[in-house]
Amino acid sequence: TPTHSMSEAVLSIGGMSCSSCSSSVTAAAQSVPGVLRASVDLIGECATVIYQHERCAAESVAEAIEDVGFDASILTVRRLDTQSNNAKNNGVGARNETEQ
Image (cartoon, rainbow, N blue to C red):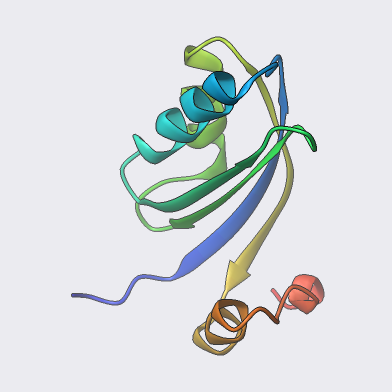
């Protein structure tokens, strides 16, 4: 598999009221080509999306979520390098927000 640079976007999601809503948001985000992983927090009303930034943009993910009936706005976007990505897989690395 070719290596693609990855980014992480956190989006504020409005209009979710149940687990079916969060499932719809997850499916919408994952339908965007280039999205590798989407995790939706129903209680926190946000979604975290890992994607290949050469293949898509956070705006595309927000549009896909809005297309299925929810409000979506981008809170943060950060690039993930190999080192911080490995740390994230081990449960660390969330403090790398200033690295761009």
